[in-house]
Each structure stands twice: as C-alpha cells, then as structure tokens.
Length: 384
Image 1: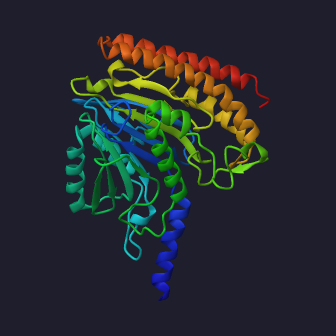
Image 2: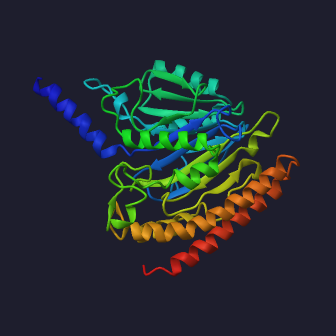
C-alpha cells in the first residue's frame, strides 16, 4: 500500500473511532407486532448528554423530535402528524475506503424528512433525489408510516438499499447488511436485540411495554456477564451491551391502525440513559410538550436522569456499578409499571372513544409531573 493511500485510510478509521456514536435500533411491521401496530425503536448513543424533546410546526407538517439541547436544526428520532416516523443508526461500513466520504448530516436529513414525508415512499423519493446531488450520510434509517409498514434504508452518500419488514421484524446496530459485513460494528448488540425480539414475539409481548421492560436497559454481555452473575461484579463495562455507557435517550414509536387518527401515534420517550430513566408516552394530538422535557438551559427531566446516571456509574464514564444499577432499576421499574398500566387503560378507552386534544395533553402532563416528583425524591435520597 502506498503512503498517501495508507494515510488516507488511517485518517478515515481515526475519524470513525472518534466520531461514531453507536445506536441500537429495531422496527416491526404491524403484521408481526403483538398489538398489530408498527413499532420503531431506537436506543440513542451520543456524546451529547443533554437531550430535549421539541414540537415543530412547518406549514402543513408538525412533528415531535428528540434534539440536542437547544439545537432545533437536527432531529434524532421523530414522528409527524401524518404518522410517518424516522430514526437512525450510523453505519461505519457504508464508508467508502479510499474515496471521499461525507458524514454527520443524519440529523438534518431526518428533520427534512419529517417536514416533507407522509409515507415510506415519500422518504424513498427524498433519498432518490439526493442520490444525484449527494449527501453527507452513512446511516441505517428506520421508518414506519400510518399504513403500519416498516422499512430500513441503508444509506450512503450517493446510494441506498431498501429492506422491507414484510417477512419479520428487522434490527440494525452500526453495520449494514449490504456494506463491508465482516466488520459488523455492534454485532453483539444486534444479536442480543434480535434474540430479545424473537423471545418477545414467541411470548406475545412484542409491544412497546415489552421492549421497555426487557430490552432498552439490558446491560448484559453474554456469556461472560449474565443476569445470574451480574450482581457479583464490582463494575461492568457497558461497551457493546444494548444499554451502553453512551446511551442518552430512547424512543419507541407505536403506530396506528386503519381509520385511526395519525396524530394518535404513540411516542414513548426516555429522555436519559436507558438504565437511569423511565419511558413516558406522548402524542402529537395533544399539540404540546409537557413541562420538563425542554428548557432554556436544559430539560429538567433530563437533568434529573443525568444525576441518576452519575450515581450508578460512580464517576466512571464507561463502567456501571451492578449494585447501584439494580438498586435504581428496582425503584424505576415500579414507576414504569404504573405508567404502563395507566397508559394501557387510557389507550383502550381512547381507541373506542376519541378524546379531545386537551384530554390527551392533560394525561401526558399528569404522567410527566408524577415522574418528575418521583425522580426528585429518588435523587434527593441519594448520597450524591
């Protein structure tokens, strides 16, 4: 290998190692989901620990989106008023070694999609048009729409490959099936998530609640670190577990059925590390974001979750204390169970009797205020 080419390859690899923040994602077509509603899931990993949730309005489009603190130029997972939802996981093997490859516009592209796309086909048209001009993207985009379908688009600078979830659920970490497959960055997370989805499907629990309760905070690295011996470790490195040290938020979007209002698509949101937060359901139909999800300086809810994260990691940026993890999860699981129960009852009623926008807003506000109160009590009791 000549020196210029070797140097170029080295720079590309260094860039990847320094700038890639893995995500673990999955999607389920309505045909295979237990509740017969499409599901779109993302554990977001990023260097941006301060996350917020924002309501955008652009002409005929309005949409929810996870954003970096006070940065409305990009969206990292979102759903719009037509029932179109999108998220991504960066894919390092879509980079073309030896050629100029551009990066880091995934957030801009997802925001653009939420302002223009009503369906999976609309998103594919958006990608087809940008194939010609090129884009700064190397990513796996997962999308669902109001029809209940789901698809991944493994997307590079000037090309993409579409994978429909018409045979089974699909999982993606940080490699693409069409890319340099031998690299398979995030293979363990991919396999672990796939195993979980298969188990939930067998048990008829492939629902947002099933994913929230079992998948998003999974810290295990089988076969070495398991549920049975996890508590025996003093510290566990959360490197390639689904629940990673760099996880900063989680979104799980559950779609609608035929003849339901697309703004009643449910957006379950953890606005913090998946081991140190709970999922709260939100609906665009409310035309609002509850207090606590965004703020001038920072989201109040996100700030509290970051304190819980600091407690279970004991000041170590990558290693969690199993003892403190289990202590905090026991408390958070009780809160989550109550949220799940109340939400299931409310959705069952709403799907038979369409609520007013105010009723939906009041319910999600009530849930959020209850979570804020309970998390504050937990944080205040900790020796931080």
